[in-house]
Length: 172
Image 1 (spheres, rainbow, N blue to C red):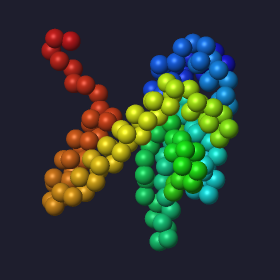
Image 2 (image 1 turned 90 degrees about the vertical axis):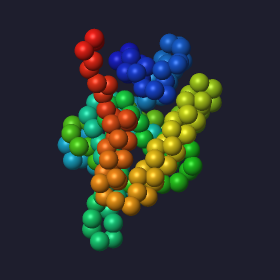
Image 3 (image 1 turned 45 degrees about the horizontal axis):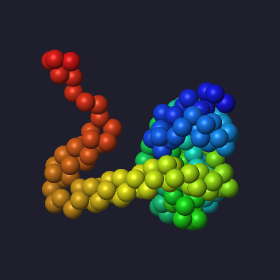
């Protein structure tokens, strides 16, 4: 349990919690292990849990009627997903699969509802949802560029801002 509490302290939505609050939150989560390529959930099963990637990496994808499977996103250590389906009460249009051996912390709908009663967590969720809206707007703007090279540059810029690391300077 201490290990999960230490890990959750690094997750953005839990960073501002006091140790006693964090301990209560850590007790709400259950740990599950997934092998490479193991399905974590399919679209029809969503809306039951929020997931936090403790170790490993997962992909969210959707199977189209023509059989293609576009990847919607990847989630790695410290990232979470499934919360929007719990908040809205609808299934998410995605299947989630472990890309490598993965450890996930899950919290069920009932305990997630209790999480939202904690003002600090509620505030962090609101900020996170606003950030995701801004990211979606940025992606939409990328799609509106007319030339492929402009779309590629804009997409790479967006990815570097979201997932990149700061450059190493001569002084540091």
